[in-house]
Image: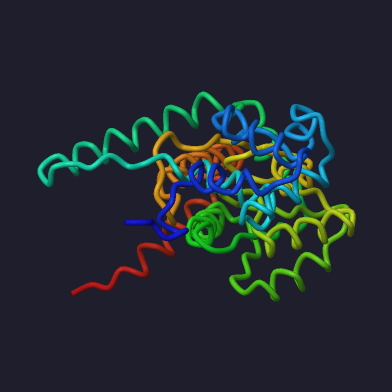
Amino acid sequence: MTLSRPELSVLARIRSSASLLGPSESKVATLILERSDEVVEWSTAELAQAAGTSTATVIRACQSLGFRGFQHLRLELARSAPMKARELDDIASSTFDDAVEAVRLAQESVSAARVVEVAGAIRDARRVVLVSNGFSGPPLQDFAMRLSTLGRAVEAPVDALAQQFAVNSLDDRDLCFALSYSGANVQSLRACSAARDRGARVAAVTSFARSPIGRTAHLVIATGPAAASHDVDPFLARIGHTVVLHALHSALAQGAETAAAAGMRHVVADAIADE
């Protein structure tokens, strides 16, 4: 039985289409097949240099192979690691093992000094606008609420258009903080670019430092891709992101006024109804 295109693995898709490419684009496809583990961490320019061609040729090759561009291909490569089939009674323990591994890999990738630096940027900014979309949305909304418990007022619009309105009113006293698994989400990238154009600083937490958002941001905390993946939901990578957000919150808490934190505890207590 012939597999339909969506059922083919990413490398199989590339292999099956490579013969249809021209000489320069074939070099790109061959390099991706031979060094797929490394390509996941490369930028478009780095792949072009390794293949001895131009960035435009890399993008055309990726599109000819059925992807929207190099960022799309790289994201699919990162997600393509198959999840092992498990017995039902082993799922819980294996999931915990995967989570521990994801945190360990993030710890090895994240610079502690950069976490302190980003926390300082949040603390010093006049206004802070938080930006995220898709699967990265809920963790950032949680981060926004937790920052409010420290007395740090932030803006975290959920709607993509509202994000654009917010970042376009920033200036050089302000900060745009983005969370993005791929670093290539179109809406988040537009917001970061607009904020930077307005003179605001841009900080980002992402899996891939060498991504469009990573290149746009002034400060980047990169967790690296998780070892295991899911076809659609990068939940293991989000574990690393969540730990980074918690580390930022902890760093900010050290400089928060005690009175402000105590006041927020009363807010929590008042929200719990007596039965």
